[in-house]
Image (cartoon, rainbow, N blue to C red; front, side, top):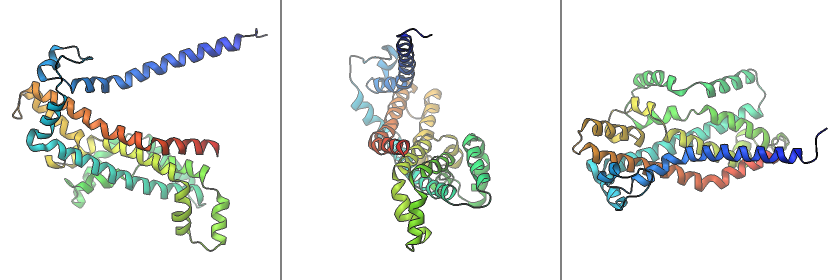
Length: 293
């Protein structure tokens, strides 16, 4: 027989253990960003001569930002613009395709539906890096290498988004509402565009946010697609500067370039943080709505 208070003690121990584990995970996740933030405020000399996790006596953030956006003819701003354009365009396309595919898999009965769902789940589990070479060969066939479409078109196929939208539509778009709209004479396109899309808007925001982050963090695909430096996103451009820094080339000392690389990496994180902060109210609302329904 369980003694009185045993469950309460066990609950407190579990809660304390969970708090410790989550705190360690939070520190592990935020420590690199904290290091980047501190490094952007230091000069090249202080970057190597002072403690890495605290500020130096001199504050060089403004000077580092000015040098970052002026170095190499202002190429970093071009890379930033490319990253935003590629990510927004790819995420918009991925969200549209995921919503249509998820709606079809969720609300239509047809032969082979189970097989298609299994293929989508399997695609989620396949590492996307192994698909880069086949995609490269196809893009070479149709002449889309070194073009924005060569990166955007493959990125619109986002299998996790299809899987998430199918599950969300199962919970948020009632079949009774679709049947009622059909009885009122609405065609399938009208039902999808004017009824279903409105009900799945929180799920759409979630898929957009996840696909945006996925495109922003892509490295291997843009590395093989683009050959012109002006078309690089940040994730490909900064490693080029890193090569200059380690080789002592690029028109600047390696020590100075490392400061710019760290500053550029920190600035490159800010759009992701801004997107999460702006869209989190829709994202959290969608998760709560799906849980209640």
